[in-house]
Length: 173
Length: 148
Image 1: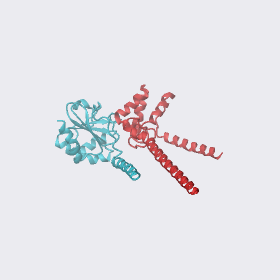
Image 2: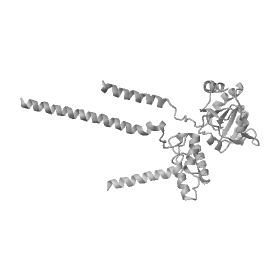
Image 3: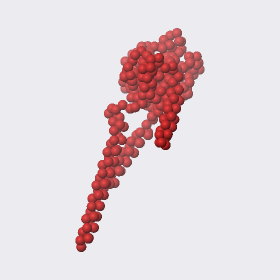
Image 4: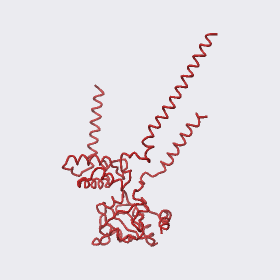
């Protein structure tokens, strides 16, 4: 009996590990920032570089921080979704333009439409490091106290928005 | 003699490999040799999250370059190794460490191989004991037959 049961359980455990391990996406690295204060930043505004965008502008408001760039192909796809989310007018979206060219970024917003209440221009990528960004697009949900509630890695879709973000936004209201 | 030559060739090849890998980092070295050594050690301990099987020392990704630049800045202003590591893990999580830390979450990872070895030894031991008993029994029955 044992001769059969022992290897069988061992195998079942192994299958369990593989099942969980292989269905995970290794490119999705969990963020240690969840539940912690979002990093502070003060950066030039893409729409008008003479002005500054800072995290203080949005304190007291639940908002999204969306990391994008004109060199990011996925971001172009995501842009329509961001416009739709902005149209719903539930939470403001703050853009973080990551390691980009200012003129191209301005052109992008003019041509594709601007879903952002403001876009911070992070030319060096220093603020992105504080946010633990390692790819674009990435989207953070930040609460009234400036705490990070959620992070989504990769392109947003309306499905992700409704299923992943909305319950957190409504739950905390 | 032959094996010595093999070792020499191998070390030469791997040495060359390290040189070519180092060429990714095009920033000028620190003037202070101690600082440069610490910088090199740390870049080999941090993972590039874009190409996850490379350290930021070996990776050509722009994120790796940004992280190297940040590391350089922090070392220049006198941050300790621990402070720099904490800076990185606070932002990117423990995954940024190329060598996983020993903590409850990684116990199985670190101790798993030893555990498997232990199980293997126990199984092997039991099989050996059983076999030797069988052999003993066989010998006994042989001798019994001899007596009759």
